[in-house]
Image (cartoon, rainbow, N blue to C red; front, side):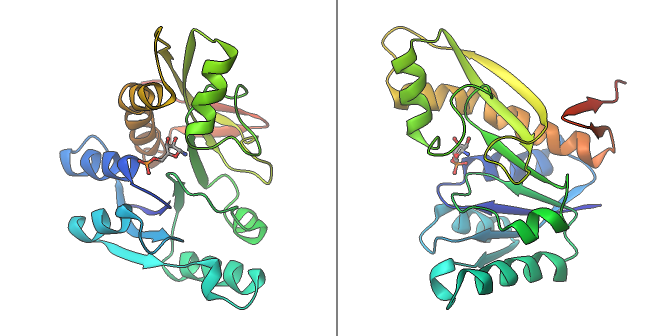
Amino acid sequence: MLRLAVLVSGGGTNLQAIMDAIRSGKISGAEIITVISNNEGAYALKRAQEYGCEALLISPKDYPSREDFNESLLQALKERKIDLVVLAGYLVVVPPCVIREFENRIINIHPSLIPSFCGTGCYGLHVHEMALARGVKISGATVHFVDEGTDTGPIIMQKAVAVRQGDSPKTLQRRIMEEAEWIILPETISLIAQGKVHVEGRSVLIDED
Ligand code: GRF
């Protein structure tokens, strides 16, 4: 069983998609050991409680220094023998010590087709505002491994979504979640659980059936 930690800051619809996929058997061979948030008020923590897994608050503001927070997050992951860390709307910079310890074992979902509309400052609704301002006809979502850069790690899976005339950042965000994010994040976890995902340099190779 692949032991997952899902890190969240907000509503947790992607977390919900993972939980649903485990429950329905779309993901087999993986279990959520813990859901960790930096935000006490995150609805995602409630989802974790309802699901019946651990819901853990580890917030930088509860520690005297950033180093102490970093160490606490790392220890929490190591103590629970986590195999894969899933960033599902996690708005905290992942500490370098965690990235080193979990090389190619941290994945993130980003709401655009990387390398478009990504990097520092590109999160949440901003991503969709930028896509609409640029006038793209297609956007989408990307699941990638996390390295020490911002949205620079090897790309595992992408799914395109049409931009419609009259879209607002919110309508585009919702369509990208429904048509891409909630599909490719569970699919990626399932593939990793099956041992089918291999990193070669900046590329990811996926075993075909
Ligand atoms: C999603 O759009 C995801 O792509 C981004 O943050 C958002 C999280 O939404 N990284 P939710 O908390 O899963 O509903």
